Length: 368
Image (cartoon, rainbow, N blue to C red; front, side, top):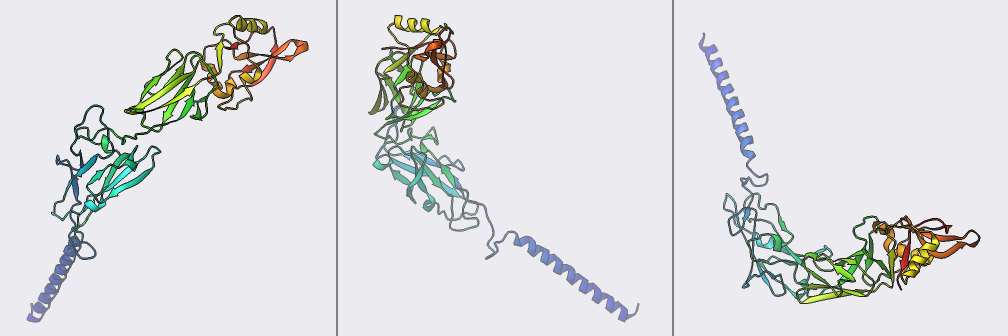
């Protein structure tokens, strides 16, 4: 091989090695760039992690100051609540979580508003009565990438940690109202919502209503003025037994509220026996009762209304839940004199039509 040829080959090898080195450097540059930010080449680290006072990750701690918790304790005005946490990441970046803190109220209508922000404690105020208190907090640092982790949202601090000294929420409302009730609550088709200012005018043994207040249901104690007339369950479900006025009271510690019912038309049903019209009339009158007129039974097919004074309007198809014979109730009103026909009402729909008096049908009487 001549010296000239040997020199050319060495030059080619040198150039090839330079190209290979350049490719390697470019690839290394690409690999390193995945660990750098686009703006300044800052190395990406781990997101900041929040810890509670037990060093449990992803959690915070709450503490109510200077109190002793007992079985009947609850959040109240002037309680001071501390929020405790620490934030760490692998790079030791400086923490900046406090400005992200929000103390939030969820009211009895499930609407939220911010009570305070940027503070690690909150003193409960009179305007917070009835609030379920929550906290939003985002682990954050001033340096490093990323500088924030996911927000930790706690809707109810009183149910967050069973081992802390935060008592049951919401904040003691110091006021209470019975705002509504549901007629026939256990019958989904017949259930009917009524505001508390509208009172039932009809009733019967076994009729039920569910009372509702503007307080947490599981914190109330319910009582009745006369359990022989109407009893009430721990959840505010009222079952009527007999005719007469009754008062149902809901109590929450030192506060209470009541509602009074006194239905004037109390119905009694023939549970097992259908009767012709004359026997039905006699069965009622022999007990000192009377057969109802049409308007006592129903004022319009399928229409619900409270107060009404008509049995079907107030109780709807829940009448079929009551033990009674037949599918209709006789009325005392005559429909066609020449045919000796009288009106009756269908319990399922409130429709009123007629039949001859010799037919056997269901019977409802009204007590005086």
